[in-house]
Image (cartoon, rainbow, N blue to C red; front, side, top):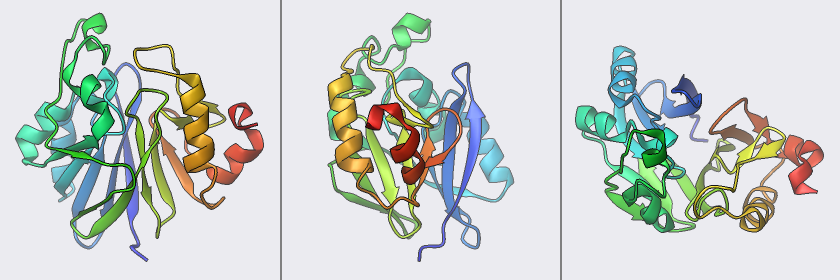
Length: 210
């Protein structure tokens, strides 16, 4: 077992969940979706003695990427994203930041592939491509610890919206059924907004999985 722990800091006007996965004894953390306050995140994590091993994005919408530049500048950590999300990361109209008045892009250091394993500071997760919320949305699965960082693909008894650029409800529901519903029922799901859930709970109560 990897014996990992997970923390959450909720940030921004959209109440985005920024997660950090870590081993207590090693004080290395992988940060997911740094919302809009990268420097603040860095300060809070370093206050607790953490070093940041990497920054992983579930997708490129503004409320998940605005803090990337600040966190990278402070920490020196690389930014990772699924390869098909390049258009959102690099186009402020497609990632909806232009429409909010805070136009932004993110410079990704490494684009990863579906099924690829990412190992940072001895912690390993697998990339699960789950297009639908955006064309390049993905989840990160820590198989040994039964943790899934689901971004805006899957929420507690709901799913992410699909009415923004590159979204598709058909692709989203297919992604969930093909990539998430097949995971063990006791996998803990950590969504981009709101409370956590489990795969088993969603199979029973999520109307979009029927």
